[in-house]
Image 1 (spheres, rainbow, N blue to C red):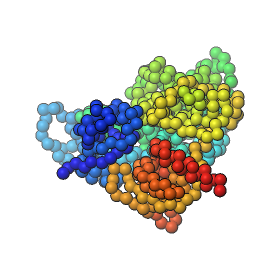
Image 2 (image 1 turned 60 degrees about the vertical axis):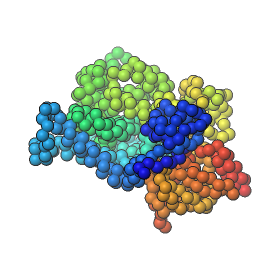
Image 3 (image 1 turned 90 degrees about the vertical axis):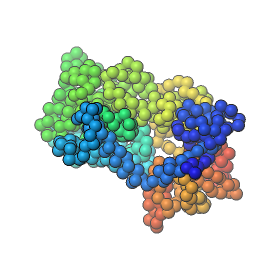
Length: 573
């Protein structure tokens, strides 16, 4: 028999899953039905918890392949795609002979090898970034605050002493990547956008760097998925376009350096520039010259050409409406495409002397409806995927009359992010903070809330973004049995602390951040079966084995209340 029947929780279903039997309560759902996104959402809304799914044994075998084997298969497929594209590019459809490697010209082989090597390097680099252990948001925020002074000193040194400290710039950007690495979620970078700093340009430059890095990482992932599309096989130009929008770590560092230096010309022309500066007509010409000014200064200091070129382009637009040269998309560098959008977005969402500040949701909707032609479509899409249409870090009022901050995105529905509710509608702090995933809730976003209005009542309102825990954890030492979702291999481990939001697990089996687990354990006499958990971070233990931070995924309400009761009783004693 080539098929196996498994039970899946509804929220773990994927498009393409096939029902193994009828769902009696809902006659429209028959055995053999192929599920799509719409049908899965309907099952979730109908509160169907589990369904039986047919799964191919071949598919099960593929799911058990190691990460290394999957990576090798992916790269082999990319290689085949590129070779097929070259064949179609070089020969007509009538040319049916099977070409061998010796039939390729040296130039074609060299170019194909370079594309494959670059894609491989980017995939490896982003995997390493995403595998870093997640760090405390509050500590990262403090480190970025400390770097504001470092960036300020570098900019002043460039203008005053005409010296460029490349090593120091690299260290700052690498720190941003490592501290705020996306951990399979590039939105993590966006939580650290600065609203206040002693120097306006320094704050703006850090924000543009964070936005640019988040977008470039997300863009690289999106392009990788495009390369898996069969339609790309026969289109060499599209292959080259995809590769052009993929970033390896060295390119991420160059992009970060360009972002930190992009307004160097403004610092030189307006050393006392602030959020409240008023410009005269005479100042306008200086403003429009600042990209050229920075380019020429950095040229004298022999800064990397691609960094200089992208700085020159940060006010250009792909439709040719920007300045200083009015270039169109084909003349942009890969860095310029990202930098021009990140710079514009931060100006729309931050207090500054150039444009009126607006709520992040209004800003992105304005760009999508009024300025879409000015920016690269893939860059726009990548930002929306990373930040959602209610961007991470923005404040909203929900239909339950609670005010919250957007903490995470839902890539399947960009209008339904994860909101952390922290205030009542009368601006009183809630005793219990609540994370609400709007994709699984009937609640709606009713109004946009400007953070400045909240600050009038609470000067330290930002603190709610950097306090991640919804529940306090208590130490335990409990045996657990776990297996990766859709596999039948179980492993024994120990739970070392727990709360209604997640746990820390010690086990000898090596997992990867992003793996989904089913966890069985007993707590205070209650048995918990098949609790869904997502591995957020993991690292080796000094005495052998591994420890993992696990976040529960849509924990059953009955289980949640039992864990809450257990932790509250432990805290009292």
